[in-house]
Structures are given as structure tokens and as C-alpha cells.
Length: 92
View 1 (tube, rainbow, N blue to C red):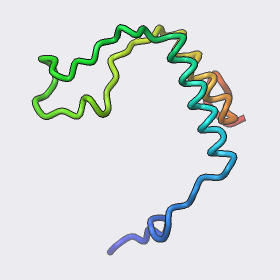
View 2 (view 1 turned 135 degrees about the vertical axis):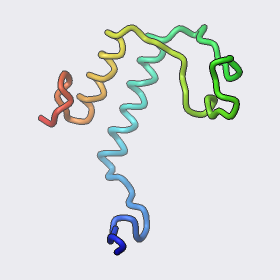
View 3 (view 1 turned 60 degrees about the vertical axis):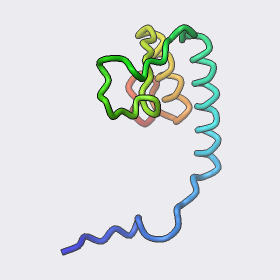
């Protein structure tokens, strides 16, 4: 028996204007965070020996390890933008 999935039918639904604005704000927060916290000397190594021969490394992976407090700062800012508790991520 096939399960009905009405949400997969029809045209895609555009996010609300509020959601679009939150995502744009998140993009800005992320760009600022990157400028403040990531070292520009991170090397792109798609041919490193530990990579599988067939790899999509260049599309999906980042070799960055920001300090834990910097990462926490980003998550708190992102959660706040989306109306979540900055520390727990729960709805407020």
C-alpha cells in the first residue's frame, strides 16, 4: 500500500517574507562571524591521502575548526534570530 504524501504534490511553497528576512539576516551574521573567527590560511586539500578516490569533498566539506566559544557564539546568534532560546535552542 502506498502512503499518501500530499505535501510532495503540487508546486513548491515559497517561504514567508519573514522567513526570507530571517535567512538573509542569518547570512549576514555568518559572514561577519567568518570574518572575525576563521583564519584565511585554511588550505583546500581535495587530494589529501585520507580522502576516498571518488569524493565530493570540494562540494560539501570545510576544513575549519573554530574555537568552541566562537562556534557557540554563532549558534546563539542564529537561535536568537529565529526566536529560539540562545542557550538551549528551544522555542520561547
